[in-house]
Image (cartoon, rainbow, N blue to C red; front, side, top):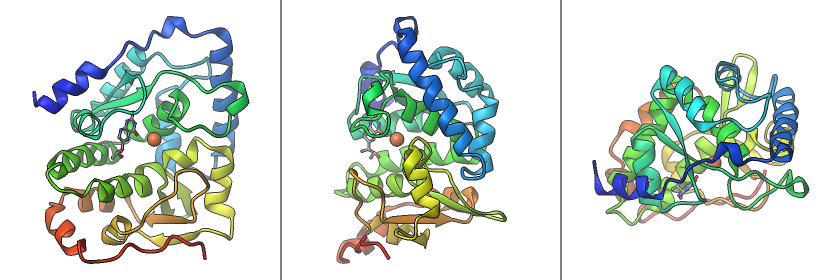
Amino acid sequence: MTSHLQTAQGLLVPQNWRGYTPEEHATWRYLYERQSQMLQGRACDEFLHGLQALDLGQTGIPDFARLSESLRALTGWSVVAVPGLIPDEAFFALLANRQFPAGRFIRKRDQLDYLQEPDVFHDVFGHVPMLAHPVFADYMQAYGEGGLRSLSFDCLHRLARLYWYTVEFGLIRTADGLRIYGSGIVSSYAESVHALESPIPRREDFDLKRVMRTPYCIDRFQDMYFVIDSFDDLLGETYQDFAPIYRALAPQPDLSISAA
Ligand code: HBI
Ligand code: FE
């Protein structure tokens, strides 16, 4: 085991599933109902399929141990609990090891639509369905491995942008039109509508170098989304060594994220 992975395992906490209150489970069910209905025809088929296949909790907040059993059988991933944001090295090491770190707390009733830190609804409803898809599952691992390889470069902001514009806020082109796969979008009612239907944001073809040159904003709807053609393409891009890309990008300025 690498030392980063050892450090990461030391940060894990028990989910303490039995400790959730009936009200917390009710919050999950409310959010689950609202999002899963709204996402029909908006989220990509891969996401909706994962949501079905994992039986993600009409009954309440999923028990990570049971959820991990189902997920492990599909793609070899598991879900582990963390106390909040963890350091980048630990985050990368867990992803490279096919362990997805999830927050265990759930948002309060008065902050259903916006929070600063990822809670269990964002982390599990938002991220875990895509981990049931074999190609996306490999992409997340490849991202973690790319992250570990990048630790010696001063380029974490570039890697964070890749994560942001794909895993968190990615769109995909399908025969039926644009669809959502990004977790930051699928776990937000208002941003799901904004991302697909608003005339305000720009929707550009995914280009790894462009993505790595594009800053992002964490406290409002995105003005820019990147659209992939397929998960195979995205995975292919991430298997390459980023070192030459970092070198090529070093002298280039960041791009603007102002809306159309
Ligand atoms: N920790 N728990 C948690 N969740 C994240 O999404 C996360 C993190 N630590 C670092 C991190 N994300 C990002 O900085 C990476 O995308 C680079
Ligand atoms: Fe997230």
